[in-house]
Length: 228
Image (cartoon, rainbow, N blue to C red; front, side, top):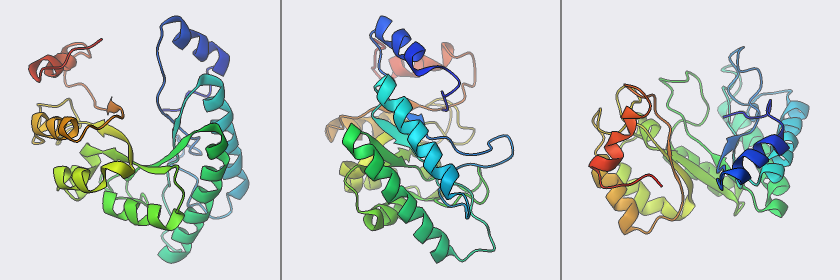
């Protein structure tokens, strides 16, 4: 998620040697060990947010990454929501404008409030409303199906309605956030929906394997997919 301890030129060489692409990173999100989960909504952290965006952009350009997830963060419950939202919109506009000359998309990810209590952007519908306010063509939704299932459901309907605004998709089953096939989400159906809609983006496997990592990939073959 946060590759910044690894020199960008070292990572770029590893990727080039293997003919691989790194498709997504998170912008620095503050004091993660101390409980921070993003800087965009935090009062008094303008300089930290600016530094994080510039660091993420510089790193992404060096490595060739075209998507940066800017986590909104956990808001101060004593602040009014409209004040926090205005701050978030302003900061994401700033970040998007920094990214656009480099062909980088800013991704906004809703995270369910059961996994991260107090996270400001919790639902895909709420994120779409924010995208309308931000009004930048390079700001898109990071649609994590696990989080979406825990908050809104209506997965296929949402994808059909909003696919042009989705910049990246992540998957895990629910409950447990394990690999597809371990829970209640019908991934055979949903991945078929993406195929029929000609989704051209990436699908990230952001799950916690219920068994060893290699074994947890067996669902791909069960659904007719082949790892290249």
